[in-house]
Length: 234
Image (cartoon, rainbow, N blue to C red; front, top):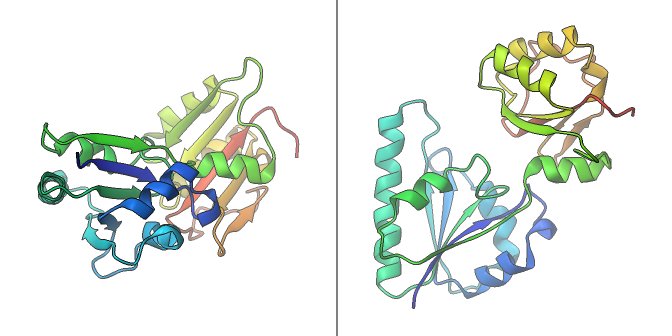
């Protein structure tokens, strides 16, 4: 019976794809891959290219990066219907997503919109912050420590509370929120205990082991993540 698979690509390095994910991709008939801008090259697709069979049909679909919920929903519904039709026709279909499918991924919405009769399976991938912690060899949490993952899009108060209540905090989507994030970390005296990595594990990775010289007006890549380590010295 044909099936739909959601596969996490990991953060960027093709070698960080799971064996299961890579093996499944070799067997797929159709692959859906997201693009943030129309006609742009999909980063997720570039990661999985070494594992694709030559006969694979690739369908690159536009997922709008907008705050307009209705626009996004229309796009997701259209793609979900197309996927459902492909699976129902007897084809094994995969959708690839950066990092892990269950961590801040549009895939979660797409999964909910598929027709109920479609069999599905989700294959995990390495989230960017997991890769980052391994790269710098600093554990996210040990013993009874607590850690949180917070999108920098939330309010300053929520970020403050997250840092106060946890030992390690991952701040995602920081690129456009430095004017909000930096004063909080500066006030907490945590600038030198925060790492910043853009394009984790990719060839163009940029790594900063301290953000003490980072300014509110600095420009960062969309693929930038901070880890605030309250209990680590480095």
